Image (tube, rainbow, N blue to C red; front, side, top):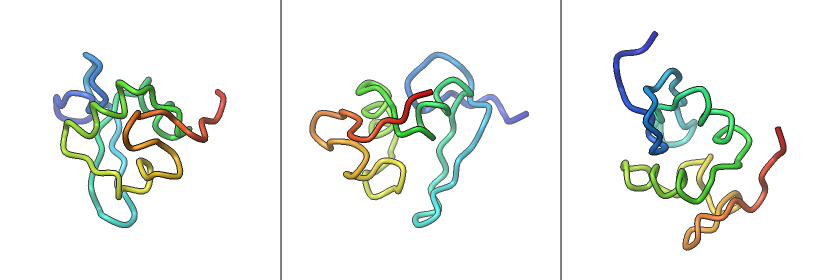
Length: 81
């Protein structure tokens, strides 16, 4: 179990998992519900912008412009779950 850290996707849950970007080494703390959308590149616009608000950048692999529109936050290649 992780320390009491809030999920960075903007929900009210506590983080349960941590993902580390392979290229930037930036850590992303997520609850298990938001992790599913993160891994499937299917974040909502609100989740995408919450991550940016929490200091994340679009140069991180899971947030780059092949997966999300930088201006609208729309998921461009979401996978179904």
